[in-house]
Length: 136
Image (cartoon, rainbow, N blue to C red; front, side, top):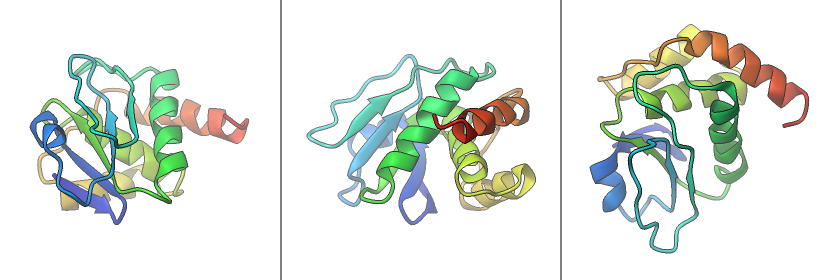
C-alpha cells in the first residue's frame, strides 16, 4: 500500500483484507474481488482488469473519493494495485484536483513504483471531466 495523498492510498486486495488502522474507508475497483469492510465506509465499482474503464464507472469512483476524502483515509484497491487502482488515483488527481495527466501519472508513479495505467485512460478522463462539470 502506498499513500498518493494524505487521505488517499493505492494498494492490493491482500492489503484491503487487513488494512492498517489509519485506513478508515475502502474503495474496491476490482470486479473479481470483495472484502468485509468491518464497519468502514465501503464502495465497489466493478472494473475489468486490463480493459479501458467505462466513463460511468470511472466517474463513480472519482466522485466517491471526492465525497469521502475530507473525512476519511481511503484505500483504493484492485487485485495487485498495478492498473485499476492507480488509474483511479490518476483520474481523481486530474478530474478533481486539476492536475494535468502527465503530472498526475508522475505523481502516482513516484509514490507507487509499479504502475500501469489502463488503456484509453486519458480519453476517458475527458468524459469524466465533462460529467463532473455538468454536476455529476
